[in-house]
Image (cartoon, rainbow, N blue to C red; front, side, top):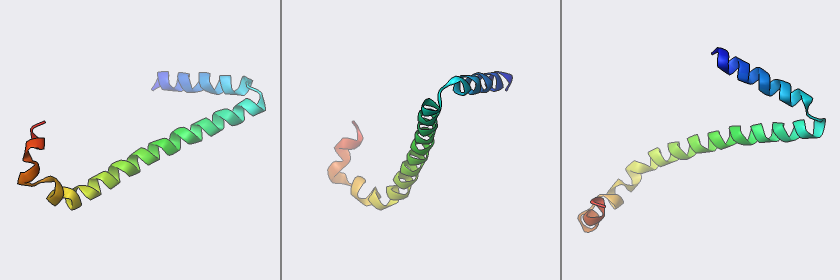
Length: 69
């Protein structure tokens, strides 16, 4: 916990030393990282929801050979 607080403090200090236009870039990048994580979560949720729908297509004798790959 302390290590994370130290890292956060160091990062905050670095950001404070940046000119305003660079702070804006850091802010945009943090927003990008957050949205990317949300997109990945959404993609996994959609994949999970679609599994049952595709089960009939995926699970058939004709394609059984591919199950062993």
